[in-house]
Length: 159
Image (tube, rainbow, N blue to C red):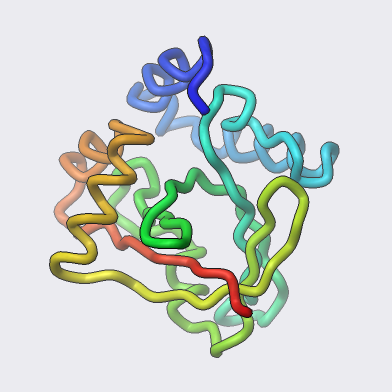
């Protein structure tokens, strides 16, 4: 799925200035996803696989939609709670951990699907992590910026 913009996106993603201005990147990505009805988020323009995660907020219960980089793994998709290597996990991590079974959905190329979610550990996490790093090498940089273990979640469509 790589294109000529993929190396540029990877370079841009590892810059400290990008992390410091991450809200701008997320705003542009969210806007592009909304305008194209989920068919063309910012990272997909750069040839990177993406999804939009839909999960209720753990405190408010209001539905939160978050565009995320993803990678294929073990008949599903994986997402990483990196927050650019920040000390705190992104809010969606807490929301997904607090969601009841059947409350999480993802949109891929505009199609919305209910998903089962598992947070991975041990050998499964390591295998999924390797798949994610092949797509986005910056995860290794992000892991080095923080003392926390970056959570890895496996999403599989519910049948």
